[in-house]
Image (cartoon, rainbow, N blue to C red; front, side, top):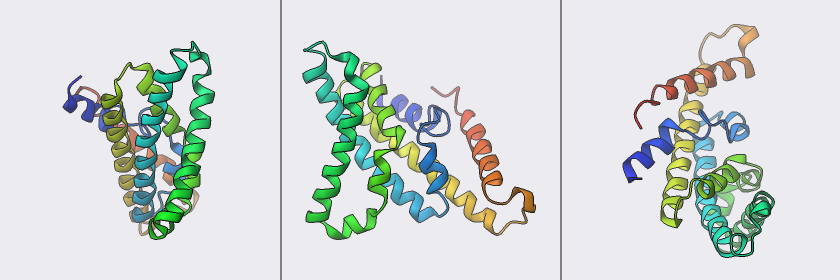
Length: 190
């Protein structure tokens, strides 16, 4: 698979949030402002790449050689949760300013199903380590793209004349649906 089709496929055609519906909780919950959406997206990118590397190495180095593929999901969940805790502890000690900037986002990432989804997609798609890392990079870039666009739309909606019955969650869900329909327009590219 060439890098261009992997990039377009992961970011636009098969966007992890808008097409595959993984990572909806942070998409709806943290996307009220562009800066918080971008911060969450950057934290997801960091953890997604690290977890892809770790889960791939565990899959190839431990699960496959010992015939333990059936434990894949539970091992990946534990590995991702542990990895997030280690990253949080290391960031707290090494770079307190970066730790403060990520703030609440790191613990939230532990429960983000997009991280586990990408780890499973990498293994099940038969990607090598480099392809898997590129896939997780472009998928997380698509996550950031969707989050920032949606946050920008929500910021504009605050100043729009929205009927009272549609304020808040209803208009956010309608906007998310329209954004997902817009991303479906990329379906024929790859």
